[in-house]
Amino acid sequence: AQRVTQPEKLLSVFKGAPVELKCNYSYSGSPELFWYVQYSRQRLQLLLRHISRESIKGFTADLNKGETSFHLKKPFAQEEDSAMYYCAPLPYRDNYGQNFVFGPGTRLSVLP
Amino acid sequence: KAGVTQTPRYLIKTRGQQVTLSCSPISGHRSVSWYQQTPGQGLQFLFEYFSETQRNKGNFPGRFSGRQFSNSRSEMNVSTLELGDSALYLCASSLTATNSGNTIYFGEGSWLTVV
Image 1: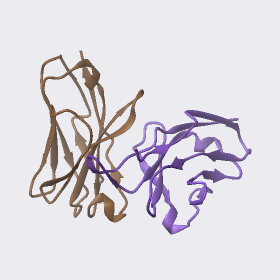
Image 2: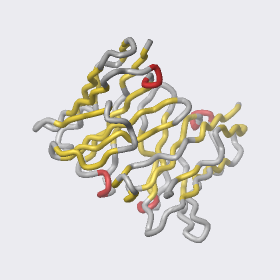
Image 3: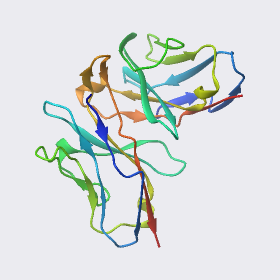
Image 4: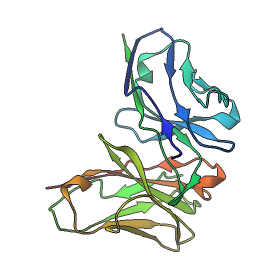
């Protein structure tokens, strides 16, 4: 089955440390991938999309087709980065038709 | 412009009842999609509507249904509620269908508790 995995449910790092949130996908074709973030008591929102190759709030994500990964990285984590992060692909066609599927999410906790 | 708004924000229902949740998309957006968010299952896609037509449906039982009106507002309905339906139900809108690559904007959600 085509799917997106985020192996870490919880990731804790200290302020100023580098952070990498892992995302792996397993479907064919040319994927288009997104990272969404949900801060405490805020709505889910788009953080960045790979096609734009931009850096948002210091975060970057590179699509690695060889490793089928789209890891989210930031060189120096800040406390305000603490949130739930979801990796998501563009809809793909599976047995049920097209679905927009999110990964299970990783909760990032940046400690002072 | 106003974001995606969902009503009601919180509600409590008993098993066997039915519930209707409402979503008003961002003005000009024609696609509305619904998701169920629970601690155990994460975010799961329910269905997507575009121009009043259901485009996609997730792997949920027929008790979950929805519709979209000509003004793009959408409702979802859950009949014969079960305890496991307790969740945050998120609505999202985008300019066109989600597979076009347009950004999806989420509402704050409707918290449903089934007792």
